[in-house]
Length: 257
Image (spheres, rainbow, N blue to C red):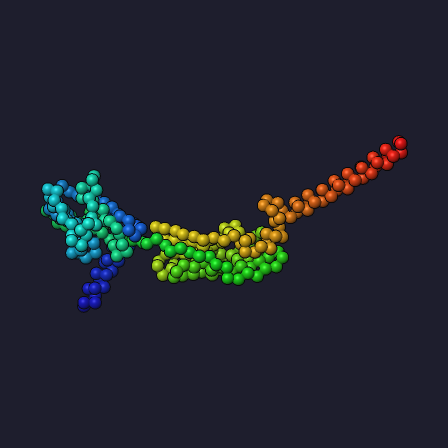
């Protein structure tokens, strides 16, 4: 019987959390718990969360209010929002559904709920080259995208200037409930770590890893190997024609003398 009651209460809490759209806030920041429709003839108005007795602030008719001891120094009142409150310096333990409850002559009711989810900024990522196998026109590179508590390894295959990622874009949820992903953008591998409040990334150009891809097709910035051959051939032809013209003129002048 006790188990059934606990299960019902737990399911009820899960239902409330899932029905209220989440608001993601960075750890250490503040959040506004806003309410607009408080009736003028209320008897009691409170901000509370989860459990019935978990109260942040209480408002009484006439403009008096009281902040719970646990939140002394962490609650502010916006100047133009009479019954709204600002919860300061949020921590992960502040992640919960906050409810604005009002008591009138007609009973109790919930005016608004805020589902606050606090997240810390994500940790930096590092993209490392594990192995490289190559030929004159192709290259296979395996790289690892990693954070402090998670990693993804992925292989990229390049033929001439076209590169593909085995299996396509890869991502996973880390132990800290953030997302770690590695993907290919043109010839650049991007390793990204993100959540709802922050993002960090590391990237590597495959042509820097597979130098033969650059060497076989690129001699300098913006000049292809084929273009270089055309320039060299043209220069050689010009010199040959110039030499022939010079010899012809020399012989002609010699005959005139």
